[in-house]
Every structure is written in structure tokens, then in C-alpha cells.
Length: 91
Length: 355
Image (cartoon, rainbow over all chains, first blue to last red):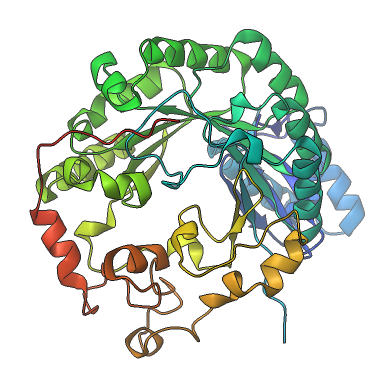
């Protein structure tokens, strides 16, 4: 499925966002693996809660980072589409 | 001295007790009795120390971890500590009530083992009548619960031709992942190597079957090859004492589940010291950590931080000295040992692991 601004996403069962305080990084825990996420990704995924639309995630980040909406929107849609494709997130 | 990076994952072998008798079991030949097992408070302490150190994932294993009545309590605690919880089970002790309790405890993932796709093949390996039916029932319960599931198949000469049917079963049971793991030849597997080790043709056929299934998509596949047919060693455990820590039922702390064969070693135990002290300072964990210990040929090799010198337990089991080069490596003076083993197969009976 394709992710649009109207999509509401949540983490698929068995996947979650986690802060690793010991190593000072963020990761996504998944079945029998964990992968590190960097840059804007922890901020974006921190807003994935099964309630907000993708559009609302973009609005919130646009306010937080005072960056142009189209820049943020491109990053958010690219990341969320990729992780939905991989089964980490689901609509 | 700088401290080593903390481990990423913990294999908690809650018990060596198991209703199955697989002749390639990864438990040591010298199994630990129920009376020697850590109690619930002991395992709770281990989980707390592991989380504090920076462990991310805990794999509850055995033996059959469901033989421990405190499994749900330990999963609950692990989740509370923000550890990712994985249950590695044969499924034969699983029923709807137990699964519901594990689900409520927040269990993140289940790895369910199958010995084969045919009842005859499965019972010949597991040695337990009716096991296949119970496993299929367990798989359907797990699927209905929504807990993500990986099916694990250990493959060897007798079942390796049925890999395509293993994938069919995984798709039918809606498992998201499948692990096709060639038998690793330590302990029980090594004892039964002449009956289990596949031929090179069988290995190549199994690799083709895996690639064909990957091309179809929709199923995550982990594929573990038997290193006897390779000429570069595997990066065993991602390097000794680097990413992985194993705790035996009695609380021994090990760099891998086969390490108890290391001779003249007093194994550190969580009853005596903290997990962090053992990981950072014990003789066992520092023995083969990094590259300093390596023989010259490994130390000067450009792959030294890729394969970390391969597997110490394999070097020990096959050459008599854990500090020797892994015989799998084509540059090892002991490489002929694995080459000869590949040529030598026998039609003899299994030595079952009974406990």
C-alpha cells in the first residue's frame, strides 16, 4: 500500500522504537534484530502512535523544526513508506 | 584499559530439560540437572543486570523454556525492563492458556522449531510421538494470537531435500519469518556428524531452494550454512565476547553455548559475580576477545575484524586447542580435517540426547 498524508500508521506487532541510553542512540527493535535509526528518524517515529495521520506528523515536525513543510514532508513520506514496505509499520 | 562494548543480546537457557531428544541439540553433552538450575530470583537478577548493562534483546531458550513454571513472570519482568523478549520453543508444551498468559506478559516474538515437514522425519529426529501434531497446533494458536512468529528448521542430510515444503508450511501457517539453519557441528551435532553432514551437492541444492523462495518475496528468510563446506570461517557470535552472552541453566556465563568445552576453565557464574563484572573482567571473556590472541596468520589477515578468527570451540573440538586457527579457514594448517569430514559419511544410528 502507498502511504499518503491521510494514512494513520502504527508499529506492527513485534516492532518498537526504543532509546538506548547506554549507547546513546535510537533503535527499532524487531524480531531477532534491532536496527539503529539516525537523524530525523527518531523524531518522526516518535510521533507514530496509531492515532495521528501522516499529515499531522508533518505539521508537528514543521512547527518543531521551523523548516519548510515540503522538505519535512518529503523526508517523512520517504521514511514511513519504506518502513511500511518492510513491515515495521502498518496502516 | 577501556571497557568492552556491552552485549546486544542475551541467550537465557532457562533449563536443559526438554521432551525432545534431537541428535543435534545445541546444549552441551554434559547436561545440567533441574536441582542445579537458577531459581526465579536468580533469573530476575540476571535480567535486571542485563538491562542495566545495555542488553537489548533476551532470548528465552533451553532445553524447553516452557518447562519452567516462572517463564511468564520472567517475560513480564523483561518487558518492564524494556528488553525485547523472544521465546525459542519446540511448542510441544504450549496450549491456549499458556499462550494467552505469555501474550498478556507482552512477549514480543516466538521462534517455533520444526524438525521436519513429515511426521515420520520429525519423530525420527525429535524422538517424541505426536510431536508434529502438537507443533502444528501450537503454530495455529500463535498465528491466531498475532504474536510474530519465526519457524525454525534445522536441516541435515535426512531432511535437506524438503526445504521447499518447509517454506510451504511457513506460508500456510502465516509465519513472517523462516530460519533454515544447517546443523552446526558441536556437542551433540559433532557426535552425530557422520550421519547428519550433507554432501556438497545437497548443500548447493538447499542454497538454490532458499534463493528461489527469496525471489518470490513475502517471507523473511534467515539461512545458516554448515561451515564445513566453506573456506572462510564464520564470524562466530560476531566475535568472542563482543555482542552476545549466554547463560546456562545453572548460571554459568558463556561467550557462546558451546564454550563449556574449554578445558582447565572455571566458568564464571552469576551466583558469584555480577554479569557486568564477568563480561568486562573475567578470564573466559577476555581470552579470545579482539585480535591480540590470534595466531600470526589471523592477526595479519585483512579479514581479522570480519570473521574474528572464526570459531574457538570448533578449533578446540577439531584440533585440540581453542587458540589454533579455525580449521574451516582455507589458510589454516588444519583445513584438511574438515575436508576429510566432508568426504566421510556413514549410515549409522543416531546418538539421541535423552534427558
